[in-house]
Image (tube, rainbow, N blue to C red; front, side, top):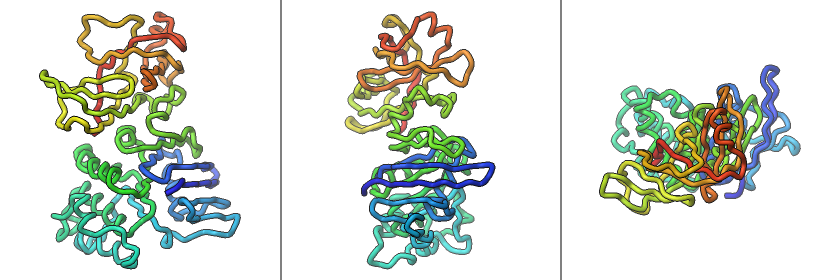
Length: 358
């Protein structure tokens, strides 16, 4: 599918949404921002649940809204699936009947997925005879996603689907969301205010603040920008795409990326498996000379490409390039002055912790 285009302006007096977006027609696009930034409003406008006067939305060549031409396709006629924070299942129906409700809305000739394939993809085959009241929060959300997929959508929308779940349930459902990403060709627009979810799932990132687009671009590039620390605060950092290349005898695994190699505690994945690594800026220290006799295994040579202030007084964010792979380090202003850091300067970066996002 070609690109997604969305232009919406909604004025509520105390809040004004003003966005003009061009998004990839594949993969996962995350809408990220603090509460009140306009994420859900954008999603509702895409779904047609909220009419943005003068708005425009096109999914490839299919136009759902073009007020200049008098086009506004109602929600029930848009080929989309919508998963809310709460699963909103029919409590009086079994899981299988809930799924059938979604599937029956679509003519047989337009059905894209078999129910058996969807239940296997989301691991809910053993739940079909149960009623929603007996399911955990994670199970309910997986059923809600399955029901949305069985409507054969051309676009899948998710509005903070993990927000109501505790950490254990989030960890339960995230692998299934990754399977959606890996195995389905449907573009997914995913609303979240959780940086870890975005880092793990997204391909493209849109940052929203007070109804406006602060940044929009590929995840790895956008997270690495030094001029956006306020968007992530203490969670500022980068995502690096790596490949498992070797399992060491001393219970370490080597992951290679464009800028070098990362060593982590031994991983179960086989050689050749692709993994995402998240490195927080707070876990990176800088030195002018290569450290010696250090317990930190991951040390990289890089070049300073940008320095920007943060929301934390007395701290700065330093952007580095490790042979074209970006890295961020959050250090004190005192340290910056002591090292006399400036753009173009070679430095050594020590990475104290690496989070693996399978």
